[in-house]
Length: 182
Image (cartoon, rainbow, N blue to C red):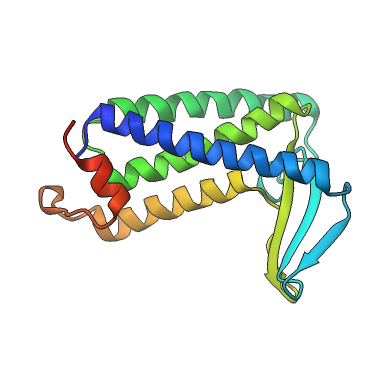
């Protein structure tokens, strides 16, 4: 278990890196890519395509009426961000991996909320990855942060959650740095 101050430091560190990288990448996509035109790299493995998405991941909910999208993608997401923040800070039993996972989800959701407030309820998406017909939808770095955070929480719940955390040892330099006593 790590103290609330260490969890707060992790949240701030991850959020600064994640939100900054995502917003900078979106700014570059907006400035450098023509809207909706696709640019392909590495044998069509990576495609860059600047789009505005009024829905969630893979445009889910984009066809909903604007008022419903507002309540779901702005109000509900803001509420969930507050809940995640307070859970992260107030929970006494969080170790490093769940803290990192929640911080990644928080930072990705925060960055997409910044977009929605800036771009009339839309987020900027620009990445598409795949081989042949097996492709992702168009997404952004904030979506990737959320997916990584969910994957970390899933991994922790499967492989670390049942272990005695008093015997859990640090596996990464980042974890060791944040797990040291103040």
